[in-house]
Image (tube, rainbow, N blue to C red):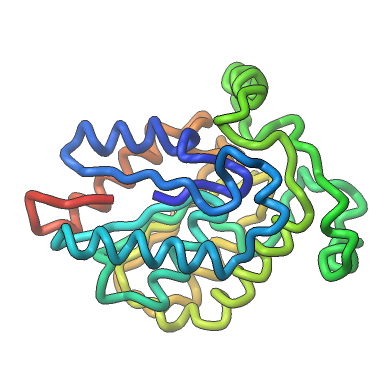
Length: 253
């Protein structure tokens, strides 16, 4: 399980516990640059994310006959990268809020300047603060997330532009080889995603070569689909997908 940009395994916790309760071993990993020392986010590269994910995938492939992937935001893009490079090691994947583009409605009016800043030294000095609505449409949950973000082990309360740069570099690499993907895939995305529009999900669905693929567009959620109004629906659709594609009693995610 791969978490989102500037997030942590904590954001995947309820999802993971649900799947574990339904018979799946679940491994939530903390991506490079997202640990105890927040300054590391300023120096991590997308190649490090790929290498890290490949190592974890290799470890699980040696232990289990079936390995599924699931990821949110950056985690979904990283899952795509693994599916392009190591299709024989992956039984299937569930992609949540796939972020190939930063074109959501929450981004500031000056977002058209981002391509300039992303490719200059300026990206090391600017951060975009995490703010309302925190990727969540449900107001009660949004208030809880605001309080939780104050804890350093949950995730960062800002998006460094250099992290955006690495995410978009990874996305660019992944987009070039989407047609290589032929494993079963479930793609879930919110119509009103505030960070990345449905363009990302549509591009994945239309370009992967998988014969077994499904795209679900949520109507009452924002980016953080695992915590919003349709979270139970997302959990259950993911479980249905894993159950439908697993042939073993001992599986992991």
